[in-house]
Amino acid sequence: MVKKIFSGVQPTGNLHLGNYLGAIKNFVELNNNDENDCIFCVVDLHAITVKQDPKELRNNIRETVATFVASGIDPKKSIIFNQSSVTAHSEAAWILSCIARTGWLSRMTQFKEKAGKDKEKVSVGLYSYPVLMAADILLYDATHVPVGDDQKQHLELCRDIAQKFNNDFKAENFFKVPEPLIQKEFSRIMSLKDGTKKMSKSELSDLSRINLTDSSDEIINKIRKAKTDPLPMPSKKEELNKRPEAKNLIGIYSSLTGLTFEKSINEFSESNFSEFKEKLSQVIVEKISPISYEIKKLLNEKSFLDEILVEGYEKANEQASLKIKKIHEIVGF
Ligand code: AMP
Ligand code: TRP
Image (cartoon, rainbow, N blue to C red; front, side):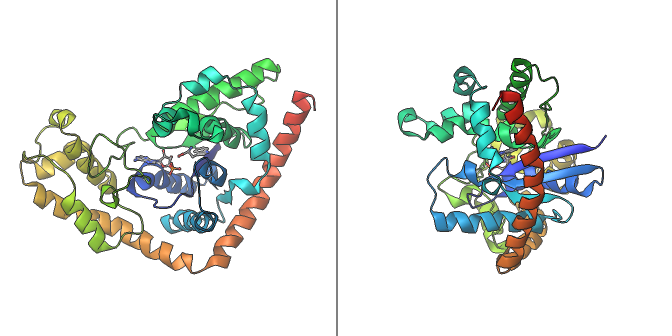
């Protein structure tokens, strides 16, 4: 079966190891399988749900494209485009916001986390953000959506919106109900400073994450300073349940080397963290350095990056325009 893949990444700067292991690495594998038809979107409309500096946003859009390509996504094979260029996204988001129920949106944990105590002062866009995400996916009849674990609830909402639209308008199978593709293990990479918080672009301390543009020295330094506990390295998987920092670092090691958790634990069982950290830095540097080098190189080739977006726009717009036209007919416009 041909899988139609759609996913998005916000151009908000500081793409990190969590984005890579939770999402982008998977995008590359999906891109490499000839049976798949993939679309990767730079979701700039999502980015402005919180305040952005226009100049930085424009740079970050290019940097996200550069990261996709540097990581191994082939723009000739997969569509890479930015969300705001295809106007059907905003339009479909409005129509779907009349299908989604406020009760559904009120249950979204990411909104609660991002809005914090100040719910009254955050943008309406931050609240309706998952509806726009549903529009992204449904416009292309995506069958599979690769994301990190934090997006699972948004995908469930997308499935509910698709089903309600199909039912309300008696349009059986009009919107495809997409399946999430979430890594079973290591689907959530945690902060290097606190194993209970996810690694995030917005965390103030840069020591909490490995950015995809970090130099080898920065990576080695951040891993050296990463929080651990006073015990030696664990010898059993069960021990990790109470040791979030050790679990996260071993998870990163396993994910990058392709080893199982058990094998990684056996390799370092009862040794010192410093020994393990040295090996871990080496593995991260080996993976990240070529990507980082390529990102920096591509950032000097602005017109190449812009061409990718124009070509991507043309292909994406062709598909989205057909779907939005059918949506108009079904709704009665
Ligand atoms: P964002 O940068 O929020 O647009 O996220 C882009 C992709 O990276 C999404 O699929 C997220 O689920 C994924 N992601 C972000 N942070 C992490 C993390 N700490 N661990 C795993 N996946 C993540
Ligand atoms: N909301 C996602 C995130 O913050 C990004 C995103 C937007 C997305 N539209 C999407 C992911 C569609 C998958 C499919 O990470």
